[in-house]
Amino acid sequence: MSHFEPIKRHYEQSCDLQQSIRQQDDEFSEQLETLNARWNDNAGQAFYPRYGVPLQDEVQRLQDNTSNFVTTTGELVNALTDVDKLNEELSKEQSQVDDLAHQQQSKNSEIAAMERRIESTHEDIGNTLSQASSIAASVP
Image (cartoon, rainbow, N blue to C red; front, top):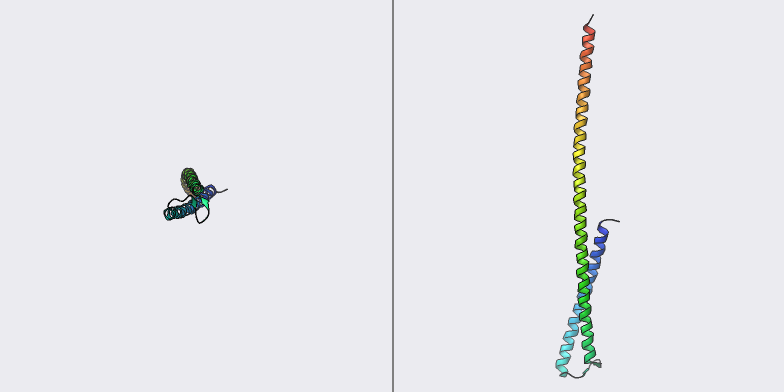
């Protein structure tokens, strides 16, 4: 599982929660406007005239919607907090990966330097053998 899967999942959940909050907010605002208009029109009649619903029931329904809105908002905040924590963990892991990559680059540089020294030593040995052969050939 990729490090990004939990973040992606939390992000999608937070988007869903945010959309739900917007819908509930829109619905609540519309209902509140309608309720206020009807209240003003009917001067506080005991029933919600259009639907025949007792006013107290309608007020309770709107209070329930408000409670659901607050709960959903809390869930969104929790999901966003989880995403922040996962981002922090991912950042720490990325730092570790970067450190390991830097260490690997240093090791590669050391290996390249050793390979150059080996090549130089081989050249020196070759030159020494050539000189030894020349000296040996000149000795009667």
